[in-house]
Each structure stands twice: as C-alpha cells, then as structure tokens.
Image (cartoon, rainbow, N blue to C red):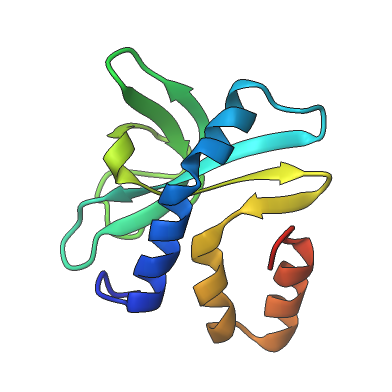
Amino acid sequence: MADTDAEMNAAIARARATLPVFWASYEAPKRTETEHTLKVRFPSTGNDEHIWMSEVKKLPGGEYAARFGDTPRNLPGKRLGDLAAFKDADISDWMFMRNGKIVGGETIKPLLKSMPKADADALRARMEQP
C-alpha cells in the first residue's frame, strides 16, 4: 500500500497508540501469550517497506533488534531471518498470540478487503478483535 493510504495510516496510529499492551505482554507474558512480533518501517526506494519482525530484543540505548519474519521485497541484501536494528519510531504495528488468537495486528485489517473472501474470513476467525 502507498505510504499515503489514509486507512493504513489510521491503522498504524491505532497500533502505535496501543503499543503499551504489547510491551506489557512482552515483559510478563501470560502462559497463553506467545509469538510477540513487531511490524517495522524500513526506508526503501518509493514507498517505505513495513515488515513483520520476530525474536524481538530490547537493546541498550532504547533501540531494538529482531529478525525479518517475512522476505523483504525492497531491501537489497536483506533476507528472511536476517537481524536488523530499529528505533521505537519505526514500529508500525505489533501482535502476539493469546489462546491461539491474534492480538493486535491493526495493519492487517485494512488488507482484509483486498483478499479473497475465504482467506479474509479465515484470518478474521483467527483474530481476537477482527
């Protein structure tokens, strides 16, 4: 999606506003809360690339490091599983699993309308708040 997409930018704003929910679970996850991931913005030619990152670690000095959870499309030399550092301002979304359901994932919601109905319905069923 374009960096100027209003619906996606609103989803990013909602996700950033609720980041404390993510960090509370990350710091002290309940037994049923797993798979904490962040979506991070990386500058690239044209639109910036927002990509899910796994194995999130807090670094000294307020930065973070994580591994690419998806294959980057517009980040030359970067691959699935590569480690990358980023700042809080680069976080565009978050999610984790609770009781087998996706918690968070605000930027997924605007994408549902462009998916085949069966795929979108299946994904909605996996979300705690579709």
